[in-house]
Picture (spheres, rainbow, N blue to C red):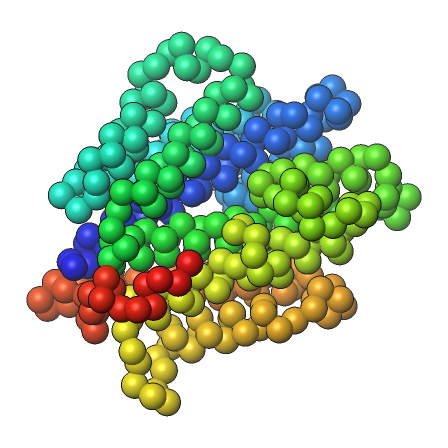
Length: 333
């Protein structure tokens, strides 16, 4: 497999995952805004902090109104991570490797792109309906990918990009609530506080699964534990880290015993750290600091993956790669 092909597959899925997450964040905030005072920025500006683009947003939209937040996150040409730009970047990567991805994958990403570009009736719908359709279109792309792409290196790099982006967005939206939206002591446990925690769970697509796993009242510690440490919820940090570690093992093949490289070391250490810790310990040591360190680890993982697999070598091939389809480890979920 060529480095450029692996790179495109990885970024197609990162961009689609990012677009889907942002669409869900904004969709939930639209619903939450109905329960807040008119003109309140309560459910809006934290989304900019969660996206990590506050400086760019402030320079483009000094007033920071709710409508400007939505425009910046969904359709702004000047925001590289807006939903429209994410889909544009994903389509361009897909166009370059059409011979590798399936026809169904290309048709779906192409359909999303042209819907956002030229379908005026689409944008005239209610904002929540627009966001819901974008989210569903991205989820349909995941399903088509999993249903039509062989479980070879193409699928492994696709999954790798999706998982890294998902772990990053889960940590960011949780960090915003814990650190930037931490209410005053008088508001803890109040109606607005509980509403924010419910909106956080819905932003991560986790509300129903959280309620099934925990029948008691919604508490901040329980929400944080579910999103960070749950081993079976597919958007939790621990689940993503486990699948990332497995995918890297499949892609990299059998490493020499006792000689792990930097990528294998960081992946294993990060997984172990978040698999064998308790939420009480994380909160006691500072949840914001722990999440901040995790985001640094995720960024470093990306850099190591890029350096090892996406920067072309002299023969423009991926180093030390084997055919994943012949590896028994590929049956791992």
